[in-house]
Amino acid sequence: MNKVEKFDKETATDFGNEVFDAVKAIAEKYGVTARHVSGTYDVGGGSLKERYEFTVGDADTLAWNQYAERYGFALEDLGRTFENEGETLTIIGLKLGRNVKVRMRRESDGAIRIADAEFVKDWITGRDPFAEREKAALESLKKGDAAYILGAKPRYLDYTRLEVLSIDKKAKTARVMLHQTSNFADQRVKDRFNADGELTVPLTMLVRIELPKRPENVVSIAGTK
Image: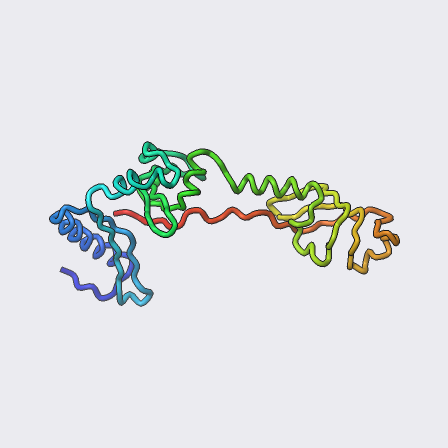
């Protein structure tokens, strides 16, 4: 038996695997299922932390059968496989807590993914709330709403006539034509306005825009052994 002088990737893996084999044997003795959740070693190699999860019977199925319908799922959604952002996921149960989450297995490598229940319901129905919010924001911006233009207040305050010529979502910019405003503070173009705040010559400018951000939907990913 080799004595461990310090934990690095190789020794942590070998030692961790052997410990997990012993843990599984003890779990089997008591009729419970053991799952390796995570393992980390510190930078200096002086310590190794391993985390395990133990379940009695089929805990995922028990929790799902008891609470799934309460949170808007059908009982038959357990075991359902679907695609999301290029990954194939299978629903394996619920993770109960203050915010209910769904446990899923990533089919490519068996890793466990945990996400908010509301996100998973959208995924399996094909609905994308983020895309809906982004579409509404773009439509509003195209109609001349300056709310999504960064720096709109006070420099671009109180637009009354704003025409959007083009939008670059990737660069987060929009080319707009300003026809009229009641409060434009840029002295460089002050002479372009008449007394009524109308531009004698429409002003074209590139502005930065801020659209709704896609939320981080996957809360955690836990590897399996």
